[in-house]
Amino acid sequence: NAGVTQTPKFQVLKTGQSMTLQCAQDMNHEYMSWYRQDPGMGLRLIHYSVGAGITDQGEVPNGYNVSRSTTEDFPLRLLSAAPSQTSVYFCASSYLNPGTDTQYFGPGTRLTVL
Amino acid sequence: GIQVEQSPPDLILQEGANSTLRCNFSDSVNNLQWFHQNPWGQLINLFYIPSGTKQNGRLSATTVATERYSLLYISSSQTTDSGVYFCAVKARKTSYDKVIFGPGTSLSVIP
Image 1: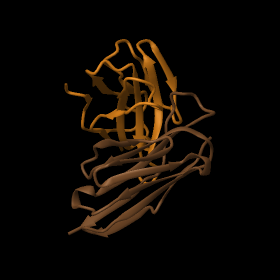
Image 2: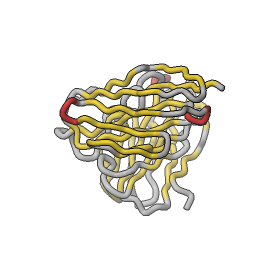
Image 3: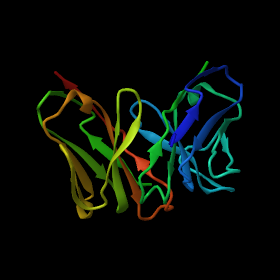
Image 4: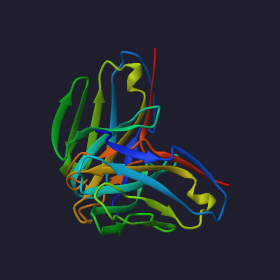
């Protein structure tokens, strides 16, 4: 199993550009989440999904969109990038509710918005 | 919402020393997890410990849910223990899918 994969590993955007961060898992996990990690603030939940076709907002959803058309994939879209979105983005998945089950994290995407 | 604090924010240890990391939370929780983020950024789950004590090799964790804290013990530290340690909780009153992370403790183990 590849586990949780994320692409790209690094990305530089200009303010106003849009892009999609890709996340895929091959463990048949129902639950998937996107987090951002900023210095001194730990990880904050952006959006999450409890299964294909079902998504919901986390702590910091503004400026991001998600969709879940398949169990395997959970892309995160930045609609109009802003410097405040410079961060490291992690995707995670779990078989059960992440509050009661081990979450498996991808390697992260380091995003810089100029 | 629930607040999660971790202490100390930074810790430097000589190889072989022991340490205790603390996680305090402001409300009742259904569960608590400890994660290690290595210097390359990879996050690994260490313990799922809503209450009680668990041990895994040189690491052990204790959660006292009634007093709203958890402790992570690292014994005989090694340089490979370096990185950031996060605790993450799911509050009883929140949506069952949301996990809140603390700000982390950055550990450096020097030879």
